[in-house]
Image (cartoon, rainbow, N blue to C red; front, side, top):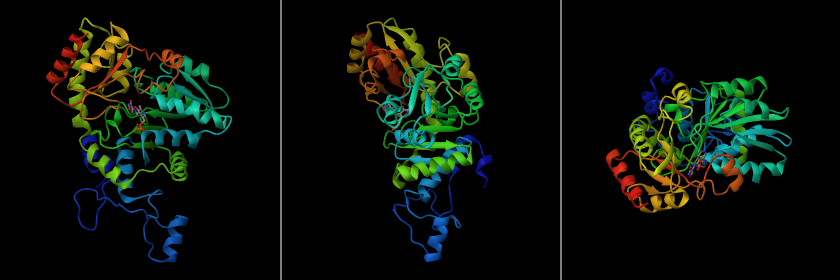
Length: 393
Ligand code: LCS
């Protein structure tokens, strides 16, 4: 069956499937580190690329490949690479495209470690990084230097929920021969397909919406350019950030319900965001589904829905946020997002605590910002929970 022609929901179920000798209905787990060659010539042919097949699980494995092929079809790419974590995907992309003396432009409000690793590790190898507000095209243009090799975007940003126009930013970057990588974790390919909008690489923490059940950590890179694909795969194989077959099986199982889960969480998020916006103790709410979001029109254009991540600030600032987080009962006080359970967390002291205060302030990650990841519980229960916690302030 040519799964490329199927609709998105059908791809979630069938893309990447392969026929198994036993007729297994689901992709089996090939929990093996290595694969036996039929004879010496077979081994040599596999290594030389004269024959297709599996050699060693860090290089490739049927269960992992099934997931990679599924993700590639969901993002409309030519190839996917599954990795041990979202951060393994981030560092593999940096490693593949950057060398000593190169420059990278990065959205300032990205997931903390995606920015932190550039300062803490890549700077040691002579890689220069500029962290800017990529939602402003003119700032990207101003930051481009002759040695700029990568434009790294995260949209919407974690945790400030700001958007970058992927199409316009990619056009600008490509005029200068710059590779565009988009962290698509907050949307998943169900809500946004960066490659269709002109980006070169779509990056994911699979830990979030794609797996969706808060039970594994994983990452992925998908590209539509065969040369970039080979470069990324070679880097992954050398750096050793590969996924494990069991992890791949879990993601294949989780991703099948991606659209159902996001539909429900997103429907509830609109109701929760409106509830928060009208609450007297809430100072501001940032959610792409609210008309008050400064980039509401861009969200309508480049995303197929506003998603399930909300950031907000309380009039009582940091202390009020702490009271809220200590009093929620249904929502878990936990980092991460994109699972079936509702989570609440405080970026300045948790996910983005590794960044210096000035860097956080420059990226609008204020001390009072609370991040809310809406799950798929009954929306009445989610609202009742925040309402009772807000009353404690
Ligand atoms: N990209 C984004 C946008 C993320 O939110 C995260 C993790 C990563 C990359 C890294 O993925 P990982 O290695 O954890 O799979 N974000 C987290 C968060 O907001 N809370 O805890 C982890």
